[in-house]
Image (cartoon, rainbow, N blue to C red; front, side, top):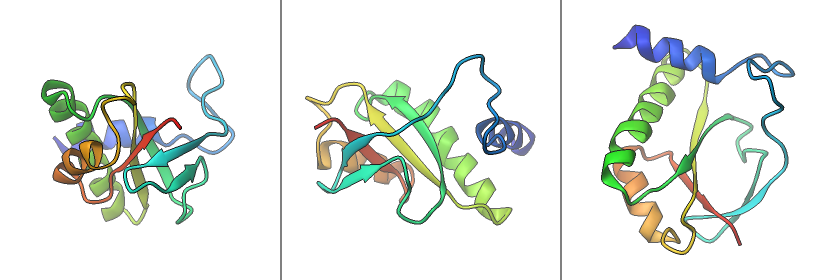
Length: 117
């Protein structure tokens, strides 16, 4: 499992200014986290961010993708690279505050849940 995680880690963290994708990915955002705080694309701790767009409350999706993200974050931490896992909800009417925070905390204590304003 570690080789797979390492491959995902390398793909998830390309060198700054380089993208393996044919389109530009990233850019500024201002969203609200699970605690009601405002977050932007600049992590508060200057960590890289591993971002997932999806749902916090759909067990089948959450259990697969978000758990893999948590493993990636832990493996990178072992290598001395701090990464903040973040989930931007695709269902902001359902995923606000603790409705998103509790499921994400079950997966990894560092997960940040984000929703539009």
